[in-house]
Image 1 (cartoon, rainbow, N blue to C red):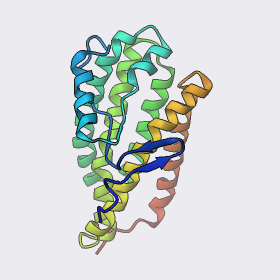
Image 2 (spheres, rainbow, N blue to C red):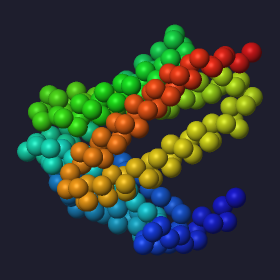
Image 3 (cartoon, rainbow, N blue to C red):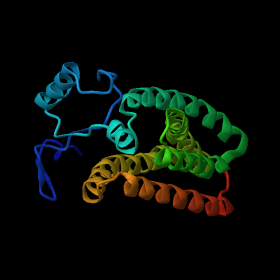
Image 4 (cartoon, one colour):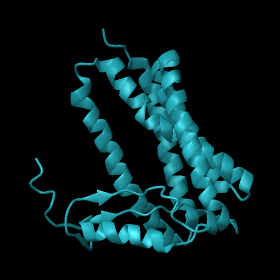
Length: 218
């Protein structure tokens, strides 16, 4: 199953020494939103340890490109984390009460947060957008697992949920490079944010239509 884990792979013009990927993390190792020796050392140790690809967050550049509030980016991460923690609890309770309708609602809420983030220019709007984004993102680890088990039954859940999480992983790997590439080509993060917004709205519409066929497992 893992015979290819430590073998090289070429993605377009980039060759990775192995298939080990480290996603972006909220480490709080920056000083006022700027690079620090501690953060450099952290990534250096992971690279020396053998990580083939490391993804670094883009929140500060996005905030900086939209306004002169780069100093506010670290606080946005804090608000994002608060929203994420609250969302995991709230969406779990919400699914228990409204069922599968929580899926399109969480996607729509995430779209609202991303839309607000794309037009934010003040600390208050960035704070609100970060909380909404975290709140919507918190649903990822709650509503989809609940929907799968409710629709297909607990016996089928172990076979199906890995595919759901695989889609989450593929999106996590493809999204940041694509967003960065679009920003480099256009000189703005706006198109990438709009693409993300369009994907969320399409998913919200698709899952709303799917409500017609949703039947709880017996």
